[in-house]
Length: 578
Image 1 (cartoon, rainbow, N blue to C red):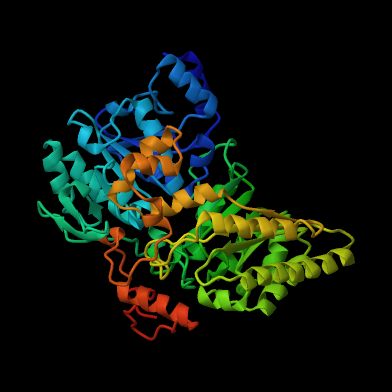
Image 2: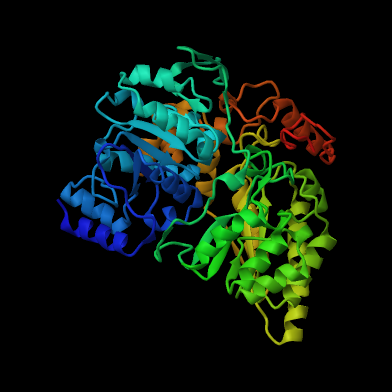
């Protein structure tokens, strides 16, 4: 036992406000794991939504597990005390189901640590019937489950609100062996059981086939919630020790109709759906009883058809509004006024590319004039700081495109400075420049990621040039981390074997050598048009032919054609057509 670890958990639990714990006894016990530290996990709205949903069931309870903080990790290893739940201090093996919520590929590296601390084998084939079933959910579960196929017993392919109820119902009424239970669960819509598929590879290492058995479907179709108003998604546990501890988070919409060719979120949450202002009213009122600031969560907050009414509702109730970023072409003076009134000191916008050619390539649908107009609107609205999101390494990018990025940054800075001088205060301009990572189920899924060495040269050049601009800075995520994300997001089943080596501190190159893999095969290789892709075991509802046509249009410099009434080509329109 470690009194130090248990005392910290009790203090953390006592500091929370919101959903109470459920008592044990006669309930299906679910261990919900977020494979990162508490500070990150409790900032994740999807994680909180699943936690609340399970605990609202009379026949189930849910308790949380996290990657221990760095000092706690050392204490676990020093004392040998296993990983335990925050609520009751129980161990993973005492639960009926282990559910892992995964939103980011780089969190895969924490899985070996978590399983090791829990004293459970990492790989599914090594777990016997005495261990609970392991279910993986979250974005990564239906973007590309294959790198984790050897670890997870099953995946929830799609949105939890429609998948969890039948899954838990089936689990409650079965006392079958593990193999029989998995075969039974695989018959549920949206449940992927990787052990029921035989994978074959060609001589060149590409995927040859995935053959289903034991009644498992040939492809697992993503499940999605038709009416968001039926299932609120909001902060249910309030804690100060989180990234968004000063606010209540509320999901206002899901999916996006913009069709940016690089964006996975724009394709795997189709069709776009909104929560109504009327449906959001009681949720927002309840949240304002806990926090004065309301964080509006959506891939496209400004595109909500009732965003003005939602903002006024919050402001009139004495609350403040927080948004992660704003849409350049739908931004209004009223939006800026609401954010300024809510105390926003920084607004983020995403030009994504400096040249018009590259913005057209990714179907961003923005002109330089629109970008500068939005900059002027934000600056004149009294927001002191501006953050710009850019991608480098996009397919077909040239040095001229890099120069265009710098010219656009200079023009934006000039607009910003002119407005700042008029109001007597100069703010800061931040360029967040990150590598393009080709993602599954996007038109650019066939593209290669630019090699790290080449990206490094571009970043060094950009840093030198931006360093000459006063009040302007450039930030970038680790290139090695980006390379790893690319491999894990585009990998097949063989890549899961890298995780123990990477978690132990091996570089990606060293881990690949150990397992006889080539990182370049997954990261910097252009996929051929007819190649079978590992993630296509999932049926997202967007035809492969549409995605490939979009990739071809991008290379020809053509825009995405608009959808017509009743369109079924792309899945963007939903069941009712355009």
